[in-house]
Length: 391
Image (cartoon, rainbow, N blue to C red; front, side):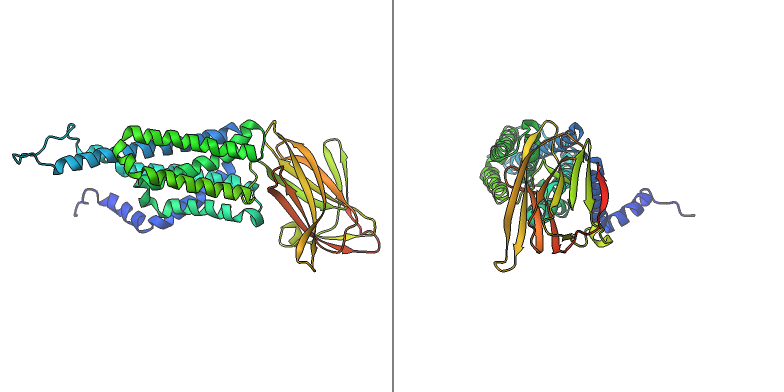
């Protein structure tokens, strides 16, 4: 019997891993996102911010250490090529380091990739919860591209400019929803403060790179700064074009009803019988409205604890002649944060015309929190409705 070669069993395991590495990586990314979607709770829970802080710390440390090691390797390689006048090898400016000390540089890009992947996954969870696809799809698509690109372009994680700009985008994306949690406010000033916080964090990161290896930092300085300026401009464009989701606000529930009454801690509503396609979101609701009848738009909007802000129900009707949505009424009211399933409120609308309607639920700074689209069909007499209790 021929004895097994040393390491043969290990090679048997490595070969399929190498062969299916990309498939395993994609599967791990999908599983990681699914796990994050269940484990990340509310945006104002300390646990979520501890996780984000840990990912950011790991990313900063791994990038900085890799930058320092690569600088030492560059200096060692430069010293090895220099010869004195007599032809003898030049003495390096520091003691020679064994090659194994630089093996850490092989693993550090993987550590950076892991940390950034965790950040993109968490960002996608929170931003998608707060986003309306019709308005925020460009930013969500960008986050998804970063999540996938973090796996596809793994070999670039050893490049200083590439990972540093990814880190700055992570700083910015995180500041956008963590600053409002602490200031308990949203709006243009809060958003600009979020950007300033990200820029300050990036400044100290660049100072760290400068301290660890000035020569290598100088070679990339203007690309590091120019890339950060481009990211800042893009984030501001997303915000002022109202593409950026309105974090930390999120729509928890929305519905259109024939009548509504607030009793204690519950809301009593009257709803039409709906087919299963409407209940599962495959079709829009159809409301049969009698003359002089009102409809009620109910919404529950989550906000962090101790935050007070204003939201607006914007009732719009589709004008088929002019081919655009006409705003026929607006109802604004103040909501308070802290309730697990969102602050509840409603608005009423009478004089409903036949055709397509939608109600936009907007934040105080005009960004879209949620939207409900439905169709109104006039009838001669009120239709039969069913009672429903909203907790």
